[in-house]
Image (cartoon, rainbow, N blue to C red; front, side, top):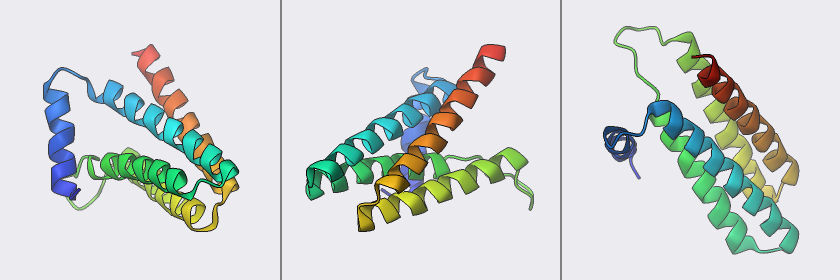
Length: 127
C-alpha cells in the first residue's frame, strides 16, 4: 500500500468517529499480537506464518509512520521526530527478525511497542 493510500485509510477511519488516540492504541495492540504470532511461528518452524505475521506488524508500523503529521515549516515536532525514529527502529528490527528468525529482535520490538502503548494510555488517563 502506498503512503498516500495508507494516510487516506487512516483518515477514513478517523472520520468514522474513532479518535486518533484510540486508533493508535489499536494499532499498537495489533503490532503486539502479530509479533506474538511471529515468535510462536519461529518456534514452530512455520516460515509462512512467521512471514505473514511480521508482514502485518510491519504494515501497521508503516501506516503509523506515514500518518505522522508533517509540519508546514522545515522543522518537525520533537514528538514527531521521536516517534518517527521509534517506528524506523521497529521496521529495522522486524526485518532482522524476518531474515534471521531472530526471536530477540521480536522481543525488543514487543518491549518498545508495549512501553509506547503504556505511555500513550497513561497520557490519555491524565487528560
